[in-house]
Amino acid sequence: DGGITQSPKYLFRKEGQNVTLSCEQNLNHDAMYWYRQDPGQGLRLIYYSQIVNDFQKGDIAEGYSVSREKKESFPLTVTSAQKNPTAFYLCASSWGYQPQHFGDGTRLSIL
Amino acid sequence: GEDVEQSLFLSVREGDSSVINCTYTDSSSTYLYWYKQEPGAGLQLLTYIFSNMDMKQDQRLTVLLNKKDKHLSLRIADTQTGDSAIYFCAETPNSNSGYALNFGKGTSLLVTP
Image (cartoon, rainbow over the protein chains, first blue to last red):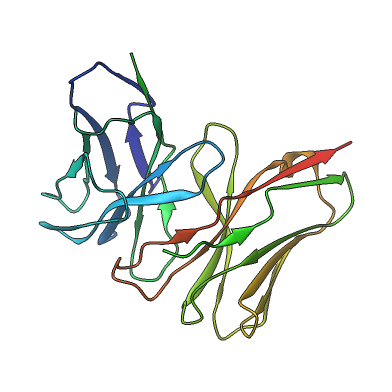
């Protein structure tokens, strides 16, 4: 089945540690996105990529980094510079203005 | 950016209709979307409407769009307990963020027996 796979489902970060969240899609979508969701909040855009080897900052990119070396993959690294990383992270993909498809999310917590 | 506005909470009885309202920000938004989120899960696309349409019906779901007032609504007929979830309205603003969506904070729908 086509879809988006995020892993891991739960992730814990220690102080000063970088962690990487995986996002893989087999929908052949050009565009991929990372959103952050905090309790009682909507989704806020961290980074997006419209094509391989190109990505752009969203509204809250500070403390995060991404890469887009393959069409299918768009990993997100939460760096130690992100002082409040506890949140639910959602990856999505789309083709143009067609609806975005979402993964099941990764919940990141601080140890 | 500006906020997409939604009421935060709605409670209905099983079998009644639910209406969730949304006010969006960008009159040039091409598509407007409704997503559903169950606890601990990702977002599931429910339906979407193109900006040149006034209404779209899909089984129990009816979407109404008033472009003049930038108002979007989602009506769920014969609401069931399985419809209890958070519902997000989203727009595709004419911004510098590609096709990224601008979301409301979500409406928590509680369906009671």
